[in-house]
Length: 266
Image (tube, rainbow, N blue to C red; front, side, top):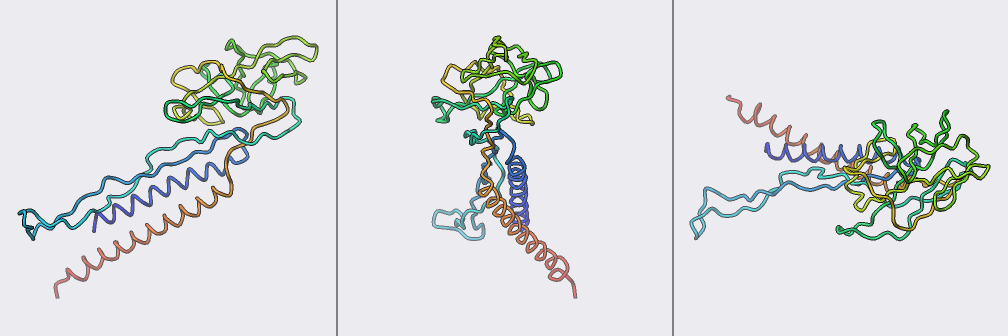
């Protein structure tokens, strides 16, 4: 009976974690470049039960069957599928459109990212091309992280009247070359770590992209969260949580009777 309590509690905890993940996806449904997280639920190894008070012809206990020992949230992986590209008309908005990228050894396709500078001075990566111009004239993210060029240096644009061509080359309104926006390639995006505010980091600095891509100014990549599917999954997680909760309550009531009624001495 106690094993049943643990199994139901494990199911509730799993669905709670899944609900938190889905809620975060829904909260970022309108965040440019956001990549939805996906969860993988697994069960603990099953236990094989045998009847100890009965012997089979082999001299061993009869096998009763197997019993599950609960579930757990094994891992959380982002879905790096490209979101929809929409026009904003804002000159500081840039959309990164992937070309034909090869598949890695794990069968997953690589991913391209804008390279930006983190708070610690190290490179970070983002798909959110909703940029701005800082007070010092640098091209930065909305959180103030400088966008890097192909040489790993910040880009000085001075004002919002700059032009970006499809290759990412930035020119001023007077025609001066201000550098080329750095685009990095992750062969295995699943190894990247989310840090919040649309930024991800890699254990080692990602190489420059050697594949075809296109940058479109005055466009933005939307989040790839499917709001309808996410709402459906949230309802499913809630119902699974409630089902495990009822099982837990049933076990609790049975234990209460076993302790306070069955074991009572008249």
